[in-house]
Amino acid sequence: MRLLSTPTSPYARKVHIALREKNLPCEIEIVDLRDPEHAGKEQNPLGKIPILLCNDGEAIYDSAVILQYLELLHPQPPLLPSDPMEKIRCLRLEALADGIMDATIAWVQEHRRSKDCQDPGLLKKQRGKVQDGLAFLQTQSRDWSPDSPLDLGRIAAIAAIGYVDLRAPELLVPYADLHRWYQSLRDRPSVAETTPQ
Ligand SMILES: N[C@@H](CCC(=O)N[C@@H](CS)C(=O)NCC(=O)O)C(=O)O
Image 1 (cartoon, rainbow, N blue to C red):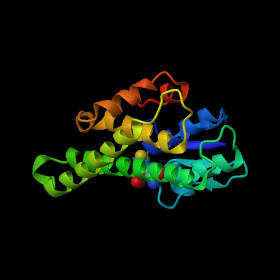
Image 2: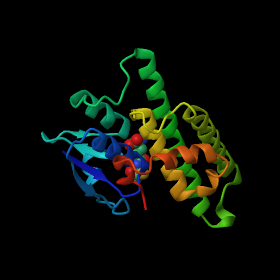
Image 3: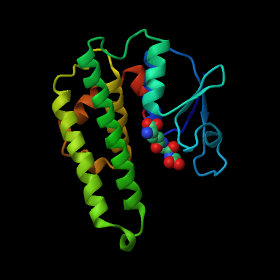
Image 4: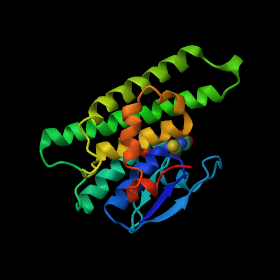
């Protein structure tokens, strides 16, 4: 398997953590998303990474589908609960964390524009999504022990929190308990080895 990735993509980090938790070897190819001809364009019409290239050449995207693929083909250790409703809750958490990533990226991109070009309404809307999402994660995290096995929802939460911490740490400040939960996992190999710099 080969994963098309970038060093700071939170979506790609979800996949890196799952590969490490499942102890699956995978070649990593770093893609330069600024290059209009980057390798991902050939594999995904949207040109987005992560993309998992299977040994038979099939390209799998996006991150949520890659995680399902890994879970189906390499079920041990399981990263989804077997109870149907618990599984749905776990996938809902992944969707929420993905939404936090989407909103953080939108906020950061708008913030990088020159002050007079920024849309204050868009900044407020995206910031609100990030903060409401983090508030929900913080409530959930009170039931998460640092020693319990990770699942896809928590993996996505780690990737989302890590990305906010990297690109917009000021948005994380009000969620000290959530940040503490994140920090409590920092020595876990799958988390330590994938922390964006
Ligand atoms: N929903 C997708 C989002 C992937 C995504 O937006 N990746 C970004 C990198 S963090 C990307 O490839 N951006 C390039 C582009 O949009 O052209 C997933 O979960 O994989």
